[in-house]
Image (cartoon, rainbow, N blue to C red):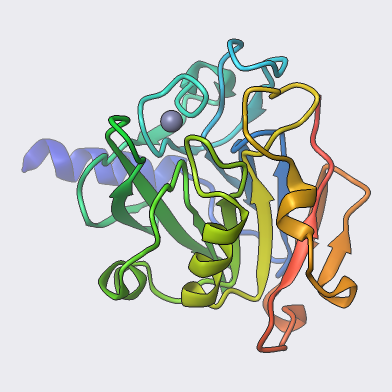
Length: 238
Ligand SMILES: [Zn+2]
């Protein structure tokens, strides 16, 4: 108990608080590896090691979430800044670090690949959810536990994660404002079943936004307000 108190006091002192600007910057490093930054505070999700076709990328963050313990999602060594690591695997609930509340929801990685943890966190009023290697249609209970989602990072590449159709089902349930597809077949990750075009097939061009960059900025005021989410197709840093 005493140790936990000391740990949270140290964290409160070391995790920079959110910045004055309302904007949150989202950066993609390829596959499922993203950072979201508000001011000097950065949260990293699912950094990969060098065994998956991508050149290892590093980023600086104070907190790093790993959805599960596969090498394309848990390379914490790629994160500079001695981050607090949230593994919280296979547990539903919430963990507060430096004033940020992380919701974690257990889901299935499919086959005999074990379980996967989805994380949701709010920065400057924008709530982000990262699905990790989700490979099942979420139940109403899981949707409820995850809570409101403004920006959703969701795998669409099939084989070991949701395929394009299954991802659509999950999106319908979570009702995010912005969808960022990830974990799909690329010239680096040739081992996945399908690329992003499979996911975009049949969708209205007006709901697709091509981000010709490895990052974009988002704030609460300018989130898309349509019932239908806007799909952000990003470039990634390699
Ligand atoms: Zn995996």
